[in-house]
Amino acid sequence: MNGTAPDIQHAWTVGTAPGIFPFAGHAIALFRRPLDFLNSLPSHGDLVEIRLGPLRAWMACHPELVHQVLMDTRTFDKGGPLYDRLRPLMGDGLVTCRHDTYRRQRRLLQTDFRPSRVTGHTELMSREAESVCGGWPTGGRVDVSAEMLALTTRVISRVLFSDSLGSAAAAEVRDSLAVIVRGLFVRTAVPVDALFRVPAPANRRYRRAVERVHAIVDAVVEERRRGARRADPHDGGDLLDTLLAAARGDGGAAAITEQEVHDHLVTLLLTGAESTALCLASAFDLLARNPEAERRLHAEVDTVLAGRRRPGPEDLPNLTYTRCVVSETLRHRPPGWLFMRVTTRETVLAGRWLPPGATVLYSPYLLQHDPASFAAPDVFRPERWLPQAAAVPPGAMLPFATGGRKCVGDRFAVAEATVTVAAVAARWRLRHVPGHTERARPGATLGPRSLVMTCEPRSRGPAGPAPRARSLATRTGTAVSSQDSRTAGDNGVDDA
Image (cartoon, rainbow, N blue to C red; front, side):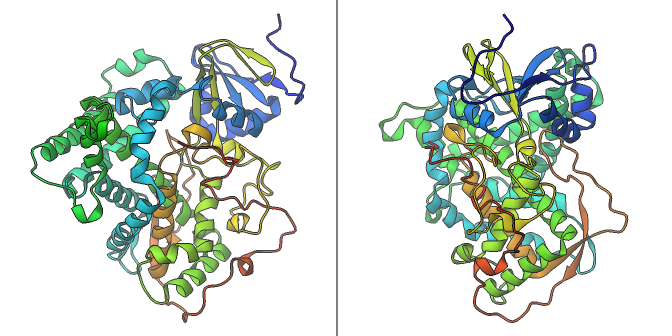
């Protein structure tokens, strides 16, 4: 038996990536040149076998295959080396849990991320953005990566804990997160546990960082239980209140465990801070490299805000081009660039029989740089996302996944990024320092981690009516996507 099965819908090609090293497999190429390695895979097939150390895995390189994987969460469940490494950190939270517990967990959490709550959080996002960028030195240098991580950590901690996480603890979470993200990728690329049990300095730093995050979250939960601090009742409570109510069994539902409370908080704290911070740092990096996109952004912000420094909820619908900048950043440089699934039963993918326990990978970065889906994919072109542009194929734009396990915080993340980009653009023009050469080297996530830029104050133009979205479009003659990064690829699928 050759391991293939007929597929009457598509003449799929299946291959094997060259360059397998003994013991390491493709881990060396994936670690040293991850994006180049990914981009090389489609030339070997729609479904390509790779090796992660001794582990045999399959990379889905075609958007239809990825869409098939993500829509069948019973067959393709969360698993593989990535989630094996994430579970000691996040436990059995929403990101790492298996299919059989996911729906119950999502129903518990999604109320706090519904559109009305996201709108209510816009003022918090705007206030924190102004607090961060308002103190930048005119003509001075700013570590944009660190500033964005500080901002997103403050925002998500306020959503989760109100004011229960003090500034010192938030700073410690931010620093621990940087250590954790650096360590996760190598643990995924080389899934050999013995290497990470060695008491080397990097392994000790990683373990200490994980322990500190868990300890900080436990301390906040215990403080809330004692009633030392409460959520602001005028904000409708925070997510910690929601979880503690669920642990008490309020509302008649089965009570969740203390461990589930902890796992949900750690998961949302880490994912809510890191990914959005990298998206923001990437946006400012890409804008500085593309003056025309930056000019259009500044023109829109000046018009919509009309001299104000802080965007509010009423401004979000009018920040059309700003939202396009965020969507194009998520396409061009998605923070989540590589994901895994594990088959729960024998199945067929691209005509290949896969046994239970097979590891299947997909990469939003790879799909979102496919010239068959995006014209000039390496070009930063926010106009792709204007309302009048054409749609992309299902599965081609997946910064937040799709289907039943689509990210619960997608709207929150896009709103936070849009508000922050507008708030910074209202004050500053950010420029790369002379000699800047940083490349986007992925870790567990993708984006600049040490981006230092110079702050130039902006003089705002006269206020006027908000420009129509169509007037911002460039006439390239090429059909480009209009679906925003929240819904691209969904085709109306229920995300609950």
